[in-house]
Length: 135
Image (cartoon, rainbow, N blue to C red; front, top):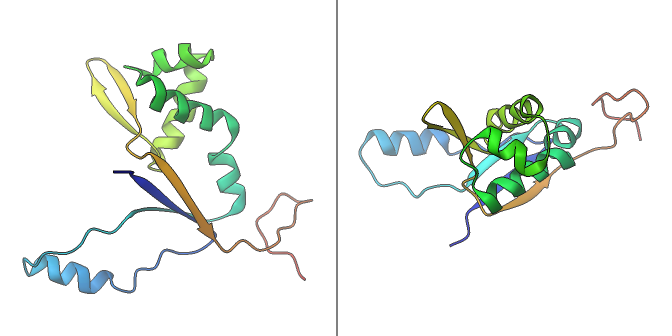
């Protein structure tokens, strides 16, 4: 079974049925699980999170299943402090988890693929801001 992380860009997640689902859970009713989702507020944030260095880290974690961040740094031939910073950013966004492994932290990716969607307007590229440009 393929585990997919659904990523939306520039849109707010649909929470219209959240109150109903929470009420059903409180009442002890069975509720179908929803797909795992990540909502990213802007195209600039998306670009920062999914830059090539971070994608390389995610691929190395999936392929080699390193036992620690230090081992991951060796796999991608980068300095451990830089990799640690990137790994923590990815963990903050829920793209990986850090599991205790003795004194080390083991990075773990729980999904097999991404699915992207969203509404991204034109941006003011010259200023680097996320303000929508006038048509």
